[in-house]
Image 1 (cartoon, rainbow, N blue to C red):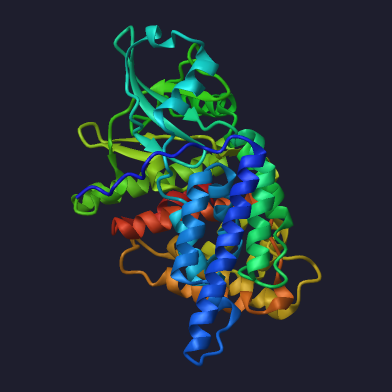
Image 2 (cartoon, rainbow, N blue to C red):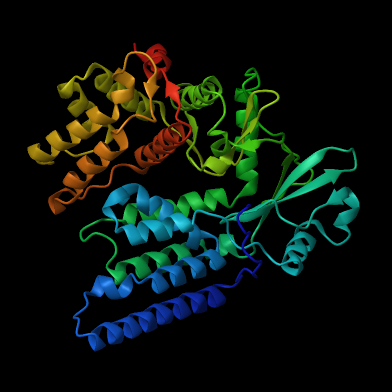
Length: 439
């Protein structure tokens, strides 16, 4: 049975209407806390603050409201979770994961208004067919299928109204909500992440900039028969609408029961692409969302979608990261420590005990690099060990240090690849893929 797509709901377009939504959300959460407190007191219990806040009703209330707000309200949890990871309460992690799923699509009347404003009235005459039912709805916009007058199938990404203008206020409002709730670890400096979230979201909301990245990858991978990057249609596109050639394919996570060799090949190609992005292109699509990939079983090609989170890297940054991986490959602890300092994992004043813990963490994360032959992600307990090591480091409040956002985004991408590899039970010779970059 297919999952039920959320019902359509109008996107609050003005700052005032969005602020009112946040106010209503806060009131609802407080009301839920009071009701739960009264219920537990009547039972003779003395509930803790977190027990009152993280009721199923409140978690559902927050997830549902932020899903309807869309925009930065849905996106902010991704960057926050990158730094805190498994240190966040499980209830909050569950809520943030819900916000990464499908959003509520716009009602047809609001969609038509957006298209009229961007293309002018009578735009329907530019297409042979246009489907008003979205193929997908996410945090920034929703995607529709169409057919041009020349018969070309098109994918049209339409941005929600008011998203760009509300980014800064949405990020601040969500951060305030999380701070007031006490859900963020005490001492965690999220200011750099919040600023980066605003910058990245403004970039993602600029569809013309995304089109430039789309073109860049189209050219960079033009000689690769293993990948398919859609073509950009400049004549239809605006800063709020991105039009591309339509690419068929199945979701990668649906291939769990495909032949082992096919699953291994897919994940091997994605790891190899990531290494090329970092060390050759200096241009990385940093969003690991599984939905950004499709697979064409008849051609064996991986379709690459959504380049809004693409980031350019300086050569000195990728070189520092390369030296760190080489040190991890060789299990050279002194070199790992030196490279970690260059990358920005810690500072000169970082306590020796924290350096040791972080060196251990990095060394463990490089386990697939050191493995001779194909690394079996399905049989590995690496994720659990990294979680435990991260917990040990994170519970020491003297070590709340936020690495550079560039590094966190690479973590995010690598973590997504590890998760996909484990889901598909893939076996990948990661060492062999990395060897060309060991000099």
